[in-house]
Image (cartoon, rainbow, N blue to C red):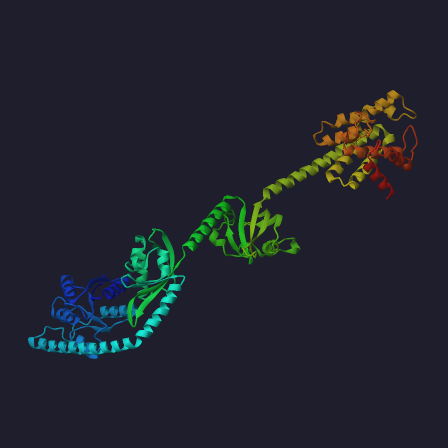
Length: 626
């Protein structure tokens, strides 16, 4: 590593030079006067000497002269860096002693580093005066040296007089300006401070003290390194070095500092070099306490992590899309289905992952695009699509039960939609298979019922078509009464086989002309119970069996086989009773001719509310009249 010996009696200047050179990768050997510098150089010769001129004990000119006269050191390049000796004759004298460069303070850190790099890259091995001098030469050098000192002293006196005069003229202006500055600084809502190159506080405002819980006197006795946690000191020193050499951007940076109470604060500091005239004094900074904001950010981050953990735990798809249909948030289930990572999806539009046809829709193919539901959600509607077709990355088509829920900010403005989708492909397949089975079973049931009806009609040809006509009338009444489809279907099936129990009645009784005896009537009345006994053990027909059992019951309890009254009867049985009576009266029977529809309707009208349900009677009459 290249070693640079830096000599300067000013602590701030020495700190600045150390910081700048170390930030560029050089090893720095500090010295506070010429005597110390010369001793260090002899002990371990450096690759370059960078020295001030005006120093106690031994100034820079004498240091240069001694180095160039010594066999061990005369090859080492030397740069003068001075704010005091600025006359061209001073430069001539310095170069005559063998110096490689004569640089006047202040220089920007970047420019100073450039000069050092140039000298190191192309050092001049011998300079005028770099050889060993004779006694006569040395006398001449000392005379010129004395001339330089005398000229410098004279110049300093003149400068001092000029400074005093200027100071007297501007003293009032400075006081007024300082008062305005202090007012602005005091009233600032942010902390304002100035530190020297060593980090010591030179000034602080009221807010800075309040935030850090120190008094102004306490802070002015401290340095920034006293309030920065130890583990962050190197980071902050590096940033200061970067600012000095122009590497760091002139924008606010976050720092962690410690108050007097031990609490740590996050602060956002905008800092810049602080000059008095052309001289770099240190840094000035504006500090804004952002602890609450950082805590809020951390709380938001924790909430996001918790939300992500929750949505990742569900096997269903969950994601958020913005108004441009771009993904803002996705869960693990969704990304795994696409064979992608979250970073491959977030920020991309859905058209980047799925076909335009699936996203935008295709009316010709009956495809409802995702965007159609998105737009409804963006208008504030909760959208439910139970059959959302989605093509996976492997080309397979899946059915999803999808909800899209609008998301709004605190002002109520919708900015995105939360999408929740459950893969229903297997369930829908099972449901379709179940529906197919039910359809097949219903067809079998109808075939069985039709077969039973035909058997009854074969044994009782006089009642052929009776059950079918009763089924038509009963189902019409049920529909008009707004019963649901399943109940209407059950009534129709019950009516189609309500007389199946007549298979237990001798056929000669069923077809006997003329009046039946009491015993014969009793036998015929057993057909209701017989129908029930035939149907009751069929698993699918329990309500149908009860309808058939009760179709000869009456409201007043005069019916059979159990003498049920009013609400003890099924509504379906009450409908079946009216339809059975009406059809029987206007149809031919072996023991009498057809009575006609008028007598049938007159019968149920007269017995309305006595034998037959009033609502059912009213609907039946209405159907025939209209």
